[in-house]
Length: 317
Image (cartoon, rainbow, N blue to C red; front, side, top):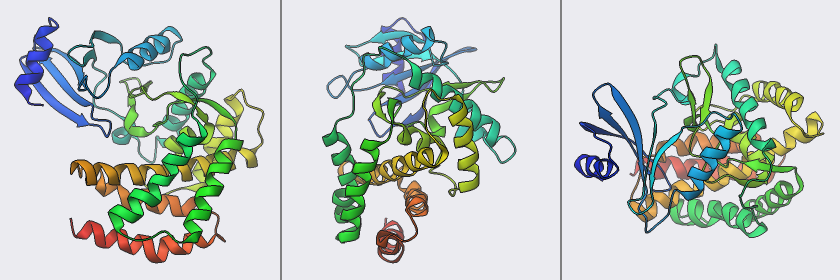
């Protein structure tokens, strides 16, 4: 949408804005804008009412706040207009503020919040189904490989997909944000962590959210750091799970997540010509390769076939 359209939507909800600054466009189609009225700022989120709604997000925001989980407060929700107006938490997401000196502290804070989210009871959320997980994994072969890279998956990729599906079903399941990464965690001035973009919360494999925060899309996989953080998580979690089991949950959740996201971002470009996340694909693929067991044939296929094909494809765009 355009700035004047956003200002007009805000006015219909009795929020005056001198300016509206576009912040980010999500893969879901949500648009985020900062409304500015003198010294006051708010965040407006627009989602076309014909394609989705904010009902679940508003419900979960209230539940989080009631349970002392730091999340943005909803000030206005207008379902007909397709907007929410929220308090402004600022621009300091963890992608911007985390560095080598503070990454352990900020990651620990993020894991503490994740444990709180996982422990919430009686939420009105759905449980991921077998078909959900299967279809998400299939995005890697059907969209990323066949359509975006225009290569055929070999048998090793099909074998990997089956093993991933089996492993994520067998690991512990708890409340799952489903996109628990640094871009969706905001640091306040006192370094408290706030969670955003939690509308897809469901019951799912614990490894997906652990991989979200520990298997970053923006920097190389660091196994020593990951295992240190998993030890901390284990000490706080309600789960009775040993180190090896927890790492395997992280591994297979990470493989599922990265395969899914490579397919999702490729589809976003193919269907809607939205290229703003294509630059993330090489690191997502690299980290996917890094956590696949060393003796698996699919690693060689990814390194020797998929990786060069991705480099060539991105160079052509």
